[in-house]
Each structure stands twice: as structure tokens, then as C-alpha cells.
Length: 368
Picture (cartoon, rainbow, N blue to C red):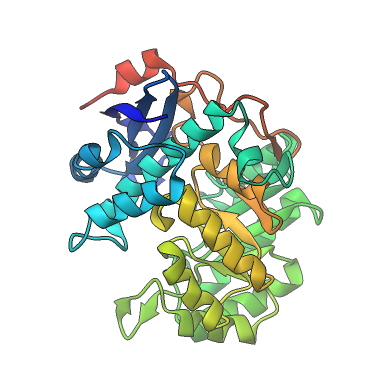
């Protein structure tokens, strides 16, 4: 079964949040990729940016790989990925637009393979479970007031969420602590609350924050450190290791790391308690699964980053899959988007990713 057609469509969608990293009324801009085989099977993948300028480069990066994609035998998944990776030699094999382009195509390849076998992708990849926990991540932003945080957190519980993430950064130590305490007060002790540090602190500041939060039982402290001699360094495993060793609150990070080689550094440095892997930045489903196996060998849990529509299948497939981040930024492009019910995603019996694109929505928001 070979790929005979590739099509990309760029869309610009409202994010339905007030602000995103200082940008008012932000938009999310995915590139939707569709592949068709000589047997008429259709597969889907995507990559995304958060502004129209980067979108042009991302779409071009995917389109540039068309000549590598056409004619590929989808049953040779290892060769498919290696061919795509080799095509980017000297132009960004290990991150950036190139790896995101590979990832979008790789996702579509796996959607095709599972559909060809009439299996949900999670089953093809391992099928460890059919129901996975999820946490609400598009809420509890730093620009909200204390009262708004409490109201929103209580509303999430009423909707059936059993876990949620609050964002810190841009606040004083005491403000962050009081805001967390307010959310804990609103939802009670049985709800899991993740803390997102957004690379805001030095190592001593992160340790201080974790120790202050500990009596209030945060589920994890994510991306705590990014300040390194005055410059942003998001992948400082040595700094992460210092924090992890010093505190009892589980430390989570990894969304900016790429390929199994990047995650090997996390393992070698004993840098984290919980590892977050972004399917696009990692290099696609193929690399995500290899990273999961690497982490399993060291008794480390794996968590998805964004892209719940895709990542739910991988987290469900592996024994060390912990939880799925629910960030419904582009759910509107699906006729029946995945839903969190009683704090979990149920894996559909539909083949592949189990997703059907809504052509009317795509037409409405299409920009290229």
C-alpha cells in the first residue's frame, strides 16, 4: 500500500482564551495534512504554530517533503521515518520546522496503517488500556484574578474533570502560593492540581516554590527553571536534576526536547520524576513510542503535551503512560472531537485516530 496523494491546508482558528503569553485574543494556526493511498485509504496529521508568520514556514517545510512521501510503502514504518529524516540533512534534522514537518507526516502514516488494519491506533501501538486519565490545561491562566481562578476551577470539577493545571510565572512567590491555595480551597483535596512554572525561576527559586507548595499536595511542578546566567535555557538537565533531587514534589518537564537522543539526556542526568513528550517536537508517533520504551526501562512515566486528539492513543498504548493533557485548541476542526468524561478519555473503536475532519469549518478558517 503506497501513498499517491498529499495535501496540506493551513487554517487560523480562535483559541477562545483572553490572552496567550501577552498576546490578546490569540489564534492557533495548524497545518492540516491529508495522505491518500493507492487503495483509497485516507490518513490525517497536523502541526501547528501560534502566528500566521511562522505558519507559512511550517507549511512550506511540510510541502517540501512531498516528493519523499509520494510512493512510500506505508507498511515500512522504520524506513518511512528514516527517509524523511535523511531528507532534512544539514537543514534541521533534530528540531524546529523540519522535525515538526516529519512528525505531521509520521502521524498521518500511522493513521493510515491503523485504518488499513481496521484498528484504533492505540491498539496497533500496543493497546495497554482503552481508558486514560486526562487533565484540563486550557484554564487557570495567570491573567485571572484569585476569584476567577476559584470560579473556573470549581466549574471544571462540575464538568467532571478530576485533574487540572494552573499557570504560574509573572507573579511573586507569595502571590503564586496564595493563588494555588485558593484553587485547592475551591476544589478540595481529591482533585489533582498540576503547577506550570513556564520556565520562570532559577534553581533556588524553584526549590523554594516546590517546598512552599508541598503541604497543599500539587500533582507536579512543571518546567520550573529556564533562567541560566541571564539567558533562557529550556533544556538544562543539570538544573532540573538539582531541583528534582532537592524536593519531594514530583518535577515534570520535557516538552521542548526532541527525538530519543534528547530524552536520553534526561535519563542519564536523573533530571526528572515525570517526563512530558510532545509528539510533534519529538518527531512523530514513531519517535514518541521509542522514547516511551526508553523511559519505561528506567521506571519513568510518560505524559503527553497538547495534541490530545493524537497523543491519547500513545498514552493508552504503553504501560508507563500516565495522563493526557487536554488542550482543545482546534477541536472545532473535527465533527466529533474527543471528550473528557469523568476525568478520562475513552478510546474509540473507530480505526486510526478515530477523527473525521469537518470540511465546513476548515473552509471557513482556511488561509492557505
